[in-house]
Length: 209
Image 1: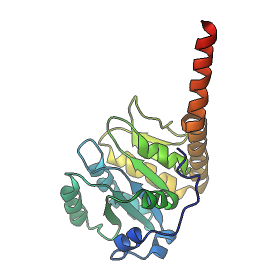
Image 2: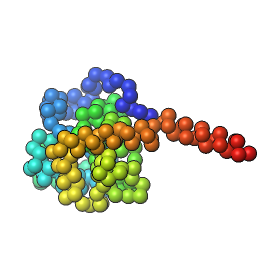
Image 3: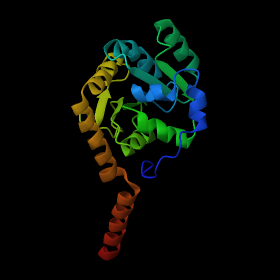
Image 4: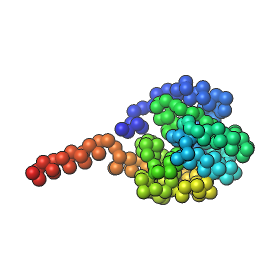
């Protein structure tokens, strides 16, 4: 379903409480937000994401990184953040509600869906909000490289950093990717379109008999 269709409600108390010790909500709006979701497990690229941050903030200082989800790599990721000296640039939110997630998509500049097997729900939800997505190159990815986002090889944090920087620095590219992200959702993944395609298929099968 199109989760961007319904009007977003008021800012959730959950998000306010989670970010209060880090930054003000106003600060989030004044910075680029790079959103990582949905898990900190080994089949997702949280380590690549962390490694990319220093290069990005050196080129685009007004950037905040938000990590959503839990997993066995959380402790390792937080230790890396401390060692790299980037604790003031990244916020670990853990699990969040659906409404909070919708709000995060709405304020994100770019979304990272770094699942090794291929992009999934996170990408489709980001596309709903017209957000470009960076994912791992895979036969299962729904990202079209250079059209609605970018694809990188697993483990290539340099390419990840470069593509994030490219999107953040170029408002025209950002607008192009964002427009195509929303179009991709509307043309290929909206539930209405999928139902219509199934309906036409069923009708053609009935008529062929």
